[in-house]
Amino acid sequence: MITEPTSKYLSNTVQSIQPSGIRRFFDLASSMENVISLGVGEPDFVTPWNVIEASYHSLEQGYTAYTANAGLFELRKEISRYMKRRFGVSYSAEEEIVVTVGASQAIDIALRAVINPGEEVIVVEPSFVSYAPTVTLAGGVPVPVNTYSEDDFKLQPEQIEAAITDKTKVLMLCSPNNPTGTVLSKGDLERIAEVVEKHDLLVISDEIYAELTYDEPYTSFPAVKNMRDRTILISGFSKAFAMTGWRLGFACGPKPILQAMLKIHQYTMMCAPTMAQHAALEALVNGQKDVVKMKESYRQRRSLVIHALEEMGLSCHVPGGAFYVFPSIEKTGLSSEEFAEQLLMKEQVAVVPGSVFGESGEGHVRCSYATSVQKLEEAMRRIDRFLQTL
Image (cartoon, rainbow, N blue to C red; front, side, top):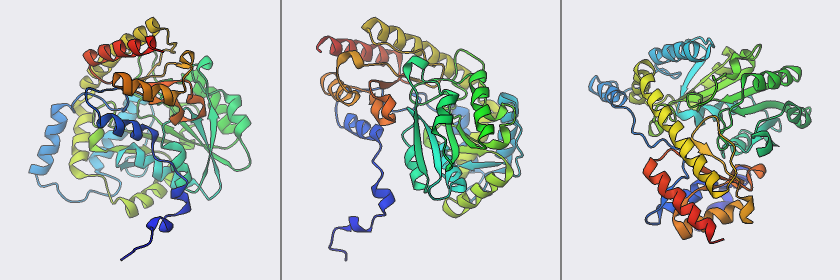
């Protein structure tokens, strides 16, 4: 029996990583009553019934064993058709697609497949909280590149050039972005692609919110000229199909890289859950109408929240996608951590401090509008009341 403190057994790498700032606020809010949470990035819709039913049928038909490591071949074929139909990019179902346990696992194995110790990965901030820690866990060095509200949080090509060293290997992109909701246009991506090609970089493009864009046609990064074979595309079913709890994602990319990712997936995960893969297949084949309905609902809620924030005097760029707004709270004189804590304690509204998404997130908070209109309206009333007490 171990009687001494066991922390001495932990690796230096794990000890260097901080717990998720989002999770801390979520746990705190969960311990309180009458809280309206705008904190967690999760659809408030239940997974469409036909998708749930497909998982029942999977079990009824006895599909309780492993699938192929890369995922059900029928699902990979459908993902291939979906990527061609929706985004104009072709991938081989046999060799260029791996079904994963959520998009998060796809990001993890992508980084572990390509990063050698000490190599640098450019992480565009504000960014999803797991990017930099996942780079560290893969043995790489995350290099933050800040984006700012005056540019609508869009990455500028010259910023990439300024961050590149002889150790730079990967650029991580996320469009629509979490937490800002910023969408990079086709022109933005083409300018970024010029730098990527010039410096022989690989791109990991997290496009989990690609279906949730509101104002312009969406461009997938591998669809940009010469970028298909320089890109590992990450996506999944959580956001667009309201399937967060099913934990099902996928990665697409050039064969050598996807086969390397498959090796890691084989040894660490074996395969994604079988019944969830059958559900995902149904979502791709018959789920697009539900995606459109949910997207329209998010669009209406986006307008409600932005209008309310503007009425309060909190400036906020109009996010082109995802289901987050990222208003500035600088005029309050509070740090984003102080603002979120005081708002939670005084008015029981949970938001996420912008600082947890990186240095350039400070002065902002992330509010998810993936909750009911009634709750959003009440949350806006409470935030307004809170501001009047400052």
